[in-house]
Length: 367
Ligand SMILES: [Zn+2]
Ligand SMILES: [Zn+2]
Image (cartoon, rainbow, N blue to C red):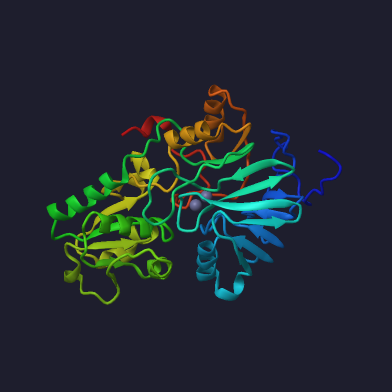
């Protein structure tokens, strides 16, 4: 550790990994700290200055002194925490900003609306903090842009070879087919409120379905926000106040928690679908009560993770947020230098049991 770097107060979460001679991003229990810029990236506690990759709750926390993020992420944070709770400075994709002694740019991450990779350049070296990302097309946000870098920090939510997500359009087709086969049942789809909900709705529209879609009240604010930010979702109606019989044969979206709850009893013979990357794991689908598991993920699967490392071939890779060891091992096999970064406090928005970081047994995940 060189002397000119001002360390944050807390102890590093793990022996600070060093590579690509970049010692100006420091992994700490509360997130990544950049001493020459004096800011935190996705800190899990309130900090004077934060750069936030995207609006999911484990990355975007309330109470920061100042937040730098895309305009869409700031709008999402304002919608969640209240407009006066977020002192934000917007930075659009591709724009550069000098922060202290470093240059910061945001690039699309393809995860949810507004999601960004944080590109930090200092003394001619570039680090990319990708946050959560995926490489598949998503009609609700711009595609992930590979940014050449010396250090790449990647998530590893689905970093096991058993995780290979099928094309999402096929999963939507299954849902619409189920609706034809069971015209008397409400089709209840569990979706996370930010991102998954709007992507599933948009994909249903792209499959040619233009009838009203019924939504749980908790999904309304962010869906309205997506529409205001230029993502049309077609006719959405509240479930509240509907007669049970009116919902026969209709598509109903609700947060995953409501699907297994008393709330669902207001629906006629609901056929429960859950849209999540974890639905490829039979045991999880069962836990969630999903009669129709839809494997639709906003995270990169195994192939997408490896593709990204092979596209970028960074001098150094840090891996966080999931199956660090499996991806580190695969990266080493590609001749890359990679290390697990054990940052705490990040979960997976699709996962009901974030404490369960060991996750499913690979043996049960085929299919
Ligand atoms: Zn996320
Ligand atoms: Zn995350």
